[in-house]
Image (cartoon, rainbow, N blue to C red; front, side, top):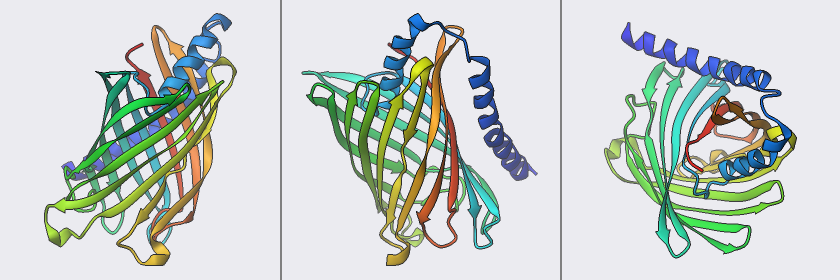
Length: 277
């Protein structure tokens, strides 16, 4: 009974998040004046930059539709993450990014619980005005509470990012790899590459449009199934709710290449909360 209750709680939370975000969009349509717009755009750009020295936390729900051999299941991941900057001197920062997912998998059997935790640490600096870089390690910790919810292996690899910030535009690419080095060998090897190009265009009154598809390559799958290639985009808004600034967004992506039985359509909805200045 407890297992079923956990599944139901996860599904309810995941389905409510997009509705909450859309409601906030509507309620805050005129929540601030023109005089605050420049500040909100600047804050949006800092939240959109993965190398920013802004302390922030976020929650993001991803619903993976058309999952499984019958294309009739929906998998869901609810991610809790943070960006924790530390000044390292000489104009550089160390940015630590922990990520803890809650996962619901409907096939080949229903499981729900914690997935594998991921921690990234980037040494970040500037190449030129408007251009920043970051490089460092990423480690995956086998915290999954079910066999289908994680790899069961300790993983690690390199991570890097290059970002350009211009007039109302934030663009760049971030990438990392995860490779298994410890844990039960019976769970198989982990050998994966992730690449996320992104472009954010900031508009009036806190609105922004963006694309940020995450390309994946699983080298342990057959050659024709290794790559996941999505295409799509989204819209978001940075606004004030009382004294708290929030950035809410929704997006949708179709996968033109993906492993067999994997979802070929997914939707994201999330909230970013800046906690610093």
